[in-house]
Amino acid sequence: MVYLNAMRHLLNIIKRYPWTSTACGVMILLFFWSFYVEPNLIEVIHCEVTPKRWQPEHDGLRMVVLSDMHLRAGWEDFFRRKRIAARVAEQKPDIIVILGDSVNGRGGIRDNISDDEMTAFLAGFKAPLGVWGIFGNHENAYGLERAEAIYKRAGVHLLERDFARIEYKGRGFWLCGLFTYRVGQGSIVPKFPPDEAVIHLLHQAVLMTDFPTWISLTVSGHSHGGQIVLPVIGTAYQPEGIRPTYPDGYSELGDWHLYLTRGLGGSPFSARFLCWPEISVLTLRADRAVVRQIDPVSGQIVAKSVREGKRI
Ligand SMILES: [Fe+2]
Image (cartoon, rainbow, N blue to C red; front, top):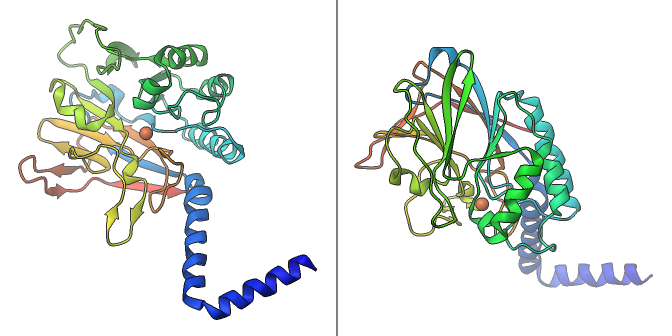
């Protein structure tokens, strides 16, 4: 009876204020979509990339790129984690890289999943050439030692101002993470054989040009693809701040090769709108892939890469 009266009352309000009621209804739907539907609609993006000096023996290597997962406590993120784990396993990657912001930054228990849950989740990623990771600004806020302990227990190899040579099919290539949130920590730049490729894991693409041009390919996240993208207006949110950002996907910008992923989560809130979470599956090619080229002077796109997505 109480519910019936409440329904009648609501219908009366809708009749008296139809436009206001419609606007409120649309707002509620958009809120529900952005917070509870779209963050779970993961798009698996396949893209061929051509790092400089990528050897024919390594042609076709599949690299899964995960960034900005912003894992949270709560039932809705439990299901999102399950979907991410299942989609990654389906790709049968040769190697997995994690570009930071796996945590949600504040270090408390309210927003983050527990350390044990985080460890178990990351430990579920498997690839023959290993799982490699760097930190993002949210690990910095969360506590680098705590995040490092989680990576270690989960079997994620941390590259923080560090290099690793990976032997594959009788030849080598390198992974590196050259940026650190820990001031004062040094590293030695090894002498690379001139024909071996070096892939740089870098959370914020905006820093890419601060590093040497012998880097064959930079993979980055942090921008969340805009996270909230409005029709006509476009990106409504951009964590790079006032500094210019690069377009999502694979681009060549002068001497630089960049793959920028939209990432999988959101911050400071979990909502995403018209910007589906992305698992990137890069196929590394020795021959030239069709690539989007950016004129470094004008910033105009002069050729586009082939980037095919599958929404699941
Ligand atoms: Fe992020």
